[in-house]
Length: 174
Image 1: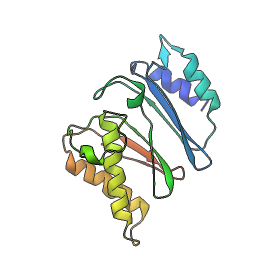
Image 2 (image 1 turned 180 degrees about the vertical axis):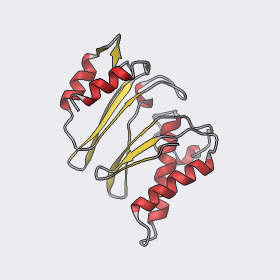
Image 3 (image 1 turned 120 degrees about the vertical axis):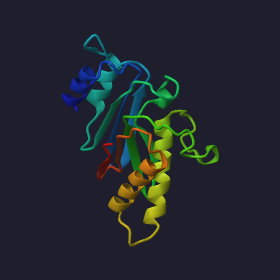
Image 4 (image 1 turned 60 degrees about the vertical axis):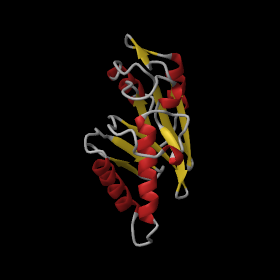
């Protein structure tokens, strides 16, 4: 992390609307998010460097935000975390959902966020839980089906989510 994240921040310097790092301590997800650039003119922010030094995990998700939907504020930065199926899950996403109604307001869990990635995570969570309710279905198949459902529900969207339960990470490139 101490080499990869700083290089990532410098390469993504145009993504100026915030940053986030998610990792696991044991089975518990940890997240640090800020609504300030991780790097400015090639110089890494002190907060970013402090966070990088604190991270030690075999699973790490980092995100640099360039706002496409939702306000520019810390609550909209990734990674997001939700607990379900006995695990803390992390999600980052690069892209944009075109539909605003992927998750009805009454079913939204990440209510502090008004961006599309929070809704994408809620949508995927619901589909994964529904699919693994059948004990014959695997988690891998549930994630594949959930990603497919997302593409069906919003065919105009651009999606590149990475989703982890701390043991395995699923990614969709679309």
